[in-house]
Structures are given as structure tokens and as C-alpha cells.
Length: 153
Image 1 (cartoon, rainbow, N blue to C red):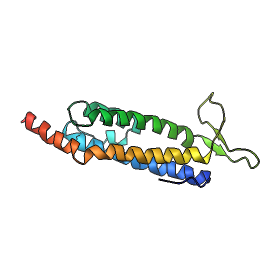
Image 2: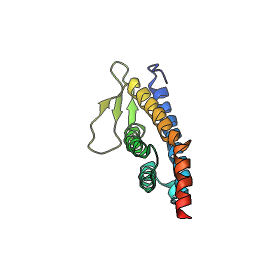
Image 3: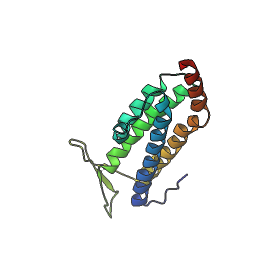
């Protein structure tokens, strides 16, 4: 677990890195599920929100232990990526005598205070989700895919 050192730039960097690691796990999940439905070259270039939607759809097509938890975690991941986008695509301005300010890159969204702690919390959340998305790929999904292939034959 990352410890908050009150460095907003490091916190932002960890958000970017750890979200990329989670996106890799979602890609790996889709590659594994390609036995059920192909994960095409074009789809591999999709935004992560679209990849998550596909992963949920494909995972719903067959039964395996922990499927509902995986789908719920994919929903949580989608929300985390939305929060990441607000921060990464916004602009953080240091105010030396006041709290740092996040100016949104989206119209009609007010400025708000941003704290290093929330960035470290989000980075740690991405790391936790990475494990949640990875874990079913170890035994549960491969076993279900083997059974799925037998029923197709």
C-alpha cells in the first residue's frame, strides 16, 4: 500500500501508473475470455470503459464461481477510471498559501480543492482492483472455460 507523503505530483503519477496496471488486467481478462468471444485488434484499442463493458458482457455468457463479484468489480473499476479521468484530464494548480486547486477540463464543472491524500487513495484503490480482476483468472475462469469448451464439443 502506498503511503501518502503529501507530494501531489507523485500521487498523480501513481494514479496514472496504477490505473494503467489495472487496464492491463482488464486486457488480460479479455484475452482469456477470447475463447468465448474474440478480443479483436480493433477492440484492443478501445477506451477502457468500452473494454469493461465487453468484459462484463462476455463474462455473463457463462457461469463460474465469483462471476457476479467480477462483474461488480468491473463496475467499480469503471467508476475509478471516471474519477481518474477527472483528475488526469484536469489541471492541478499549486496555491502556495492555500490548498491546491483542480480545474476541470470539462465545461461547467467548478474548480475544487485537491489533496495528495485523495490521489494516493485512488492509486491504492486501483491496486486493490487490479488484484480483484486478476484473482478469478488464476483458477476460476480457466476451469469454467474448460467446462465451457466441453459443452460446445
